[in-house]
Length: 284
Image (cartoon, rainbow, N blue to C red):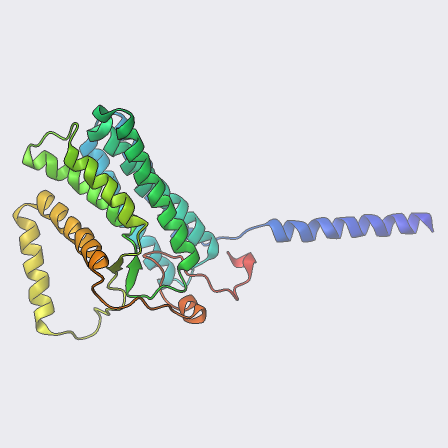
């Protein structure tokens, strides 16, 4: 009887261990998360090259990270492989590529002569970027699809990267630039602000649109081609400044909240952040 009870206990223990392994095991979608890893790779690349003093390469690496940041969400939605793991991993990679890397780049490239003020402002940019990502993660299913709340962190990082290219093209000295210091502080605050920035996600370019859309697109390309480094910086800054101005003046439509159910079925913030609450966690 004792032997039988012992065997039953052993069998129960093994079953419990197997069940625990099944619960703690995780299965992920490889393709979109591999693309997300490339996002982080380019962010780390930017860090290394900023430390080495090769700021142009660091700026281009941040641009490369932004490209993969866009691709992973598109691939995830096309392959129906969105997941909670992908959402969290994406945010962690974004902190590296669009928070830490631009912050270090700004400090070493322009703000180091300011001393303690310089590295504190660089940290402010990184911290506000992380806060912006965390806020988005908890509000992704309630904020209306057509607008971002606060400047998206990839856009803020893009402004930093394009400023490096623009300053080089214009022949300006970035060291101890009050303009760049002020720009960094303002970018930090607009990321965590409640200002609404147009996301254009509610526009379907696969549908027929008025002819002037094409004319506008061609004109935009022509303007950028005149002097790409400078024009891209001006274009990004215009987007950031207009959102802030409209927010301060209270212009534009009143923000709308999406029902949680509708939010779960619509697109996320650039990437594969959308999670189906009914999904089995073993598929993540």
